[in-house]
Length: 122
Image (cartoon, rainbow, N blue to C red; front, side, top):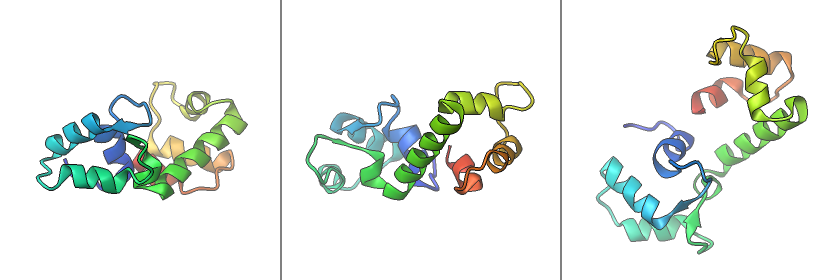
């Protein structure tokens, strides 16, 4: 797979259990999955800059992490939760939110971030 952004790589390869953390074993497995043949321990050390024993999206991509945090905060304030927001966004009632529904809902309800980029990242 070719990941065009860190958030997709985080969600699909590194944080596969959605724990918001990636430990060394998960990182090593992700490196194997994508065919990384470089210095895995060195890459780990470079990413785990606080020596916590795990990495977070914020350590890899602070901008994406902050964008998600702000979207979640907005959803919590406007709708009570992200899940509730997506329920409102789903105009068609098919349990899926299309790009059109997402962008329209973000505009109508006053989300000030980049809805287009956020949709594609999610």
